[in-house]
Image (cartoon, rainbow, N blue to C red):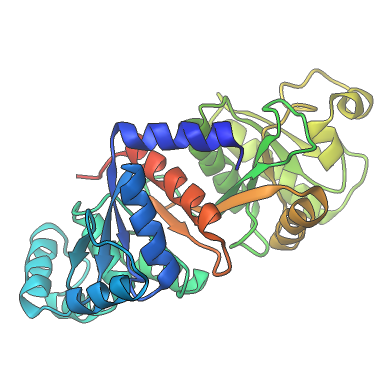
Amino acid sequence: MSESFFDRLEQQAKSDPKAIAFPEADNEMILRAACELVKLSAGIPTLIGNPQEIQARLAEYALSADGIHVFDNTDPAACESIVAQYSAKYTDLSEKSVLRKIKNPLNCAMFLTKLNHTDCVAAGRSYTTADVIISAQSILGLKDGSGVVSSLGIVNAPNFNGSEGGMLAIADCAINPFPSADELADIAINSADTVSALMGWEPRIAMLSFSSCGSSEHESIDVIRASIDIVRTRRPNLKIDGEFQLDTAILPAVAKKKVPYESAVAGKANVLIFPNLHAGNIGVKLIQIFGGADAYGPVLQGFAYPLCDFSRSAPLSEMLGNILILLVRAQKEGRNV
């Protein structure tokens, strides 16, 4: 992450520190991230689990418990309190179901956030992406107007100088294998909203393809074109265009040659939407390996509350970047009450 971007996120997070639930309290990297967050005064970490065991883990790694909150989901009284609060507010799950689910730390973190004890959830060092998504879908649910969960990454490419310098947003690189036109439209809209809130950019969304403006024909391109029409109907204020090849989307000189009309997006896109997960997953790894870029995320989009999913191999610096992104999102999105 570029120093200026990291600094901006850090300062923004410090301006109104939000509470973040960490369900993987037995993981060394999570404990280190929570302690770093306290040192930065950028957020309020809540670890889920037995307090004595968490304290022993912190001591094992010579880490301080100062400033760290703990919710003991092994304490029957604490769990019964959450069950009562949830049942008083929601009817989608029975008391018995909530009590059973809360014994899992990941589910417990979701309940704490849905009940506004915390503002967001960060997981994924031990849990898989599927674990995180299933738990969030069953407890947090989707936000109004969202029909699909998707992921967004923030790329900082040192050798690229585009409309936002070296920065780009990319989606979806982690979740949807073959999105339909409606799902692609949802991914584009949610990505635009995330980028606007998080980065302060005016989104310029390019729908990527192997074709630019009808240079090729294939049924898969028809899906992309249909998704653009859906976005323009649902959100006519958004700047979206395509189908574009990657160079057409981000290089002005190429866009000038390949796009036969005036476009608010071509050559200056800051949000790139991949047509499927093959392209997205391969694309982000090419950016990282050959381009030397940092890719932060994935930010999980579409849920009713802010949530992030760590890569299980992410270094601490990348985790902190993801956490700061999450905390700023929590500021922007606010608590659902």
